[in-house]
Structure formats: C-alpha cells, structure tokens
Length: 283
Image (tube, rainbow, N blue to C red; front, side, top):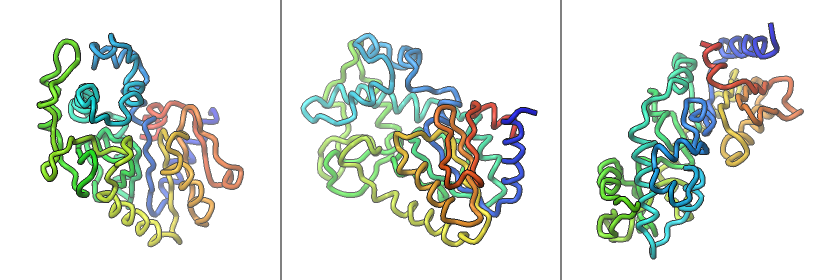
C-alpha cells in the first residue's frame, strides 16, 4: 500500500469520527473538474475573438479586465458577459463537487469557498451553509455602489453577450445600468475595488457561529485546491483554527502546495495526488 493510500484510509477514519466538517473549496477543485482558466484551449473554445486579439487565457483576461473603466465599458463587458455566461450558467455540474457533497451530506457541515462559478450550488449544497467571501458571478452590483444591493444577472448576461459583434465589441447602450442610480453595473466579485461585501457578512457570521458552537467537538477541516493567491480566506484561517482547537484535524488536498505547518503536523495531512483521483478513492 503506497503512502497516499494509507493517508486516504486515515482520512476516511477521520471523516467517520468527525462530529462536523468544515469545507474549504478553492479554484483547484474546479480545475480538477475539468475547467482550467489558465488553459489556452479553453480561451480558444469560449472566446476565440478575444484570443485572436492577444488574450491567451481566461485567467489573463480576468487580470486585464480586473478593473472597470467607465471610459471603455464595452471591452470590459465583452469579456465578462461571455465568461459569466460560459462559466456560471452553461458549464454543467462537475462530478468532483458532487463527490465532495456526498462525502459530507450526512454530517453537519459548513463551506467556505473562494470560487465564484456556482458549482457549489449546482452540486446540491445547502446555500445557507456556504460563505463566499469572493462573491458570486450570478450577481451584478452598481459600479460605484449607491446601495448594497445585488442583482441576479442571468438574463442580462445572455442579452449583453448576444450583442457581441465579430470584432468582439458591444455598443455601450446595450450594457446594464443600476436600477437605482443609472450607473454601469459590474459583476459582484472581489475583483473590483468597490466590491459590495455586505450580502456575505451574514454568511461569515453563520460560519463563525457554526465553529464556536462546536469548538469542543471533533471538527474535520477538508481543504480542496486552495493555494496562496487567496490564502487569507481559507488556507491560513484553517491552519490557525486547527492549531487552536484541540480536537480539530485538517486534510489539505493540493497538487502544488499540499504542505502543512510543523505546528499541526500531528493532526494534519497534506495530499499532493490529483484531487479527482483522491475523491474517487474516498468514495
């Protein structure tokens, strides 16, 4: 039996013994599910016109169009309407998310996720037990927030993307406007400096309450595909909580950065094997 097989047997035992599970889900889980935003082939498939203009990957596009420019809103929304349509609405439920859900569905659980692609909802997780500090692509907000409202954007995204011409441009009069003040809308994700975070504060409080009520219980933290880009939301807090809570344990599934701190090495596992393979073995 190889080391990973022994570790997965230990994970199964920890899961069986756990009184509750806290899931940390990062973009690595969606990559394991078959959608890699750094894959040039995905950009060619989803946005060939923009790829022809020099955007090699979706990830590069997200960096180029990180900030909304009210002087050039068309290019911004040509990228984002296409991406949101493809990633949030047209991408089918991924098997890896369903498998994670099946692992924890019979136990008390809570989820923190830095993904914004909607796969958690599609997998069947109870959204009242999900904290999404990075926002959700399914919603838009006012560019310069006149309020703390989010607006469900499915119809708007499909409408805008349908007006992209062969050169990858959109007329400005097609773009969505805030119902309250008339300014442009932008996706409600933490790419923008004016990100409206208030809708997620209750989720955060619910998560804190969930942990506090069980701090003397056997808590199992399962972390999937969360690296260092957004480590302050999942990776570092999980390490701190596992170190602080006597009966807590951590399993970190990460193909590039599975390491765990020396301070918790006796109650934490870092597994480098592909996440999709580990989930199959655990199931």
